[in-house]
Length: 334
Image 1 (cartoon, one colour):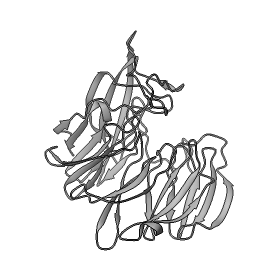
Image 2 (cartoon, one colour):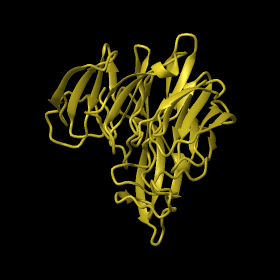
Image 3 (tube, one colour):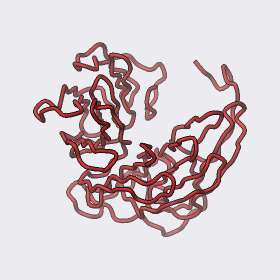
């Protein structure tokens, strides 16, 4: 256990707010942050679609577009907490609102030890070398997600950077791969999935590697080399915010906004009637991702109540364990 003073080797203040996870490579820690700036009177968010596909939707917790923001990528020395470098990638108005609990720095960076890749969605994707020199950047334009902000993180595979970009009610959604060295687009596959915040996962399916992407309408697997669709099955129905995890030849998808669901999906070449291994309809969370460890899958609700399932069968091992701090949880267990 840790307190603000116990078992702490060092502490470094980072300006602003960021929900991205720190990434460690060697003696460097890479992370992002968002610093709120001056108010911009009269600035409004783009129009959003409701679930009835009609414009004019406004989430009650949407905030932020009426301020300027400074978005930064930082490198910290893992040994002593010293900030090695700090780079500003955006300083000014942002495209859209965010959820009041979200930030504009919520996507976790990816690194291959040569470059660090940071996505800020509507505000761009940036690649730095590990010493902080900008290598390239690309813009995907405005990426509307109901005014709830960013969340999907980029991932690396065989020299390519892959990003899932599910927008509004599905029009314009895609999954795209860029050359990690140059930012040049390698492939792009259109999707019909509505807005999501989950990060895709690469899984070993035996004879091939599959890129599996969560979605409200469907969970879909792609060939990460070409973007070709390999299979698809049921989606989460609720907002796909938690990321997929993998184990025992299964991927586990969860959601917990309007519908509470966790289900296990067989990867590889299996009959479509056998694709879904099991379902569980209790104990999932709005934001936190599940944890697959050993033979078990751990779920945590927004209130910090833990459920443990047998990963292979979905059988309940226990439920009702509670984190001993009354709070609302949005971080994922590790």
